Image (tube, rainbow, N blue to C red; front, top):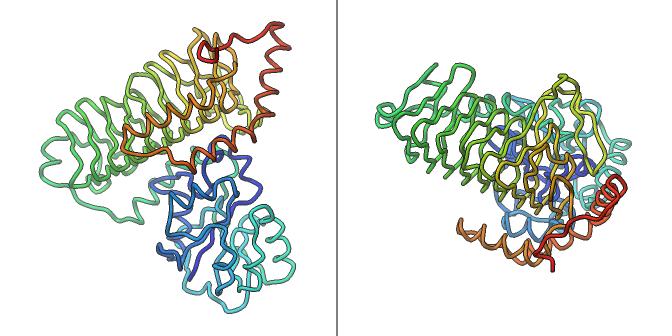
Length: 439
């Protein structure tokens, strides 16, 4: 079977997380949404088996990140039958893929919406990045439709709310068992041992506690856990990540090569991000290459226990939830002692400095927060220079494709920045303090 992952118009509802990545590259549990779809359909890696249809702005970056996958390739789509799946759809547990190749085309529905479709070249060749919704709508009128189940990721907080359940589900699917005597001799274990998996190459220092009472814990290859760290399940700790006297309180996914300290609860940290120091991070999703300064903390509960609203594109959106933290885009940094309000959304490449009070809930991409207010950010060449330094420290390169993606994104988000700065002018009656670096 061949698999093509696609993005629909719902991608904008997942900003700022999807500003720099496709929807199917978002993390949930122990893997990405795309990995869950591929696993459900039994499709392995390789250019002959996998393709994607995504926003053109992301195409070159996607090719560099995943060179074995066909990107926006109509010729690949037209070769033979293919399973087309919406990247925001999470397949149900136990999906039986053996009877999905039915010969004729069909559409699988989840909650009445098209989630996937099995089609031949005559339909697949018509897929275009900007018309995925219309493609599915047209297909529904022509072929058989049936309910296939699963769930949708419509908003950033859906990932956080569903994360604990998917950590448990992924642990069961992976069927990882076993602890080495070396690990058993250095840890304190509370709860069932069969819920704890520590890769043989991980380093676990003495005086660490793993509590599997409420769910499983996975510690991936190359991870380092320093003394006086406590980890409660369900929790997934990614490859080469380091924990520094951390208190992970359950429902936490830490991606590849992160540095984490302090208290973290019900949070996803995508990859290559730092939270070395003390401070609270809760009910949040943090992108890649983010650095949270010492004592940076976020609120995840209103004082009146009311519904939390999150600004998406600058407009408040009700979450229907009482516990919602923050959502931070890639390459964003916070200064020492920054305090983030309940339901904060910060875009990509932002510089957030503390002000002794709760900071703005809406911080558009490429801006700064100065004296507690949104302000113009650094020049792009300075932001790119910082990105090169940060990525170089982890042995990665800020590529030309990534540079172009951020240049395109800067133009795309210009109106959002202008509106945010205009609102501040209207409310304050004066001009923004400008960063010295802009002189």
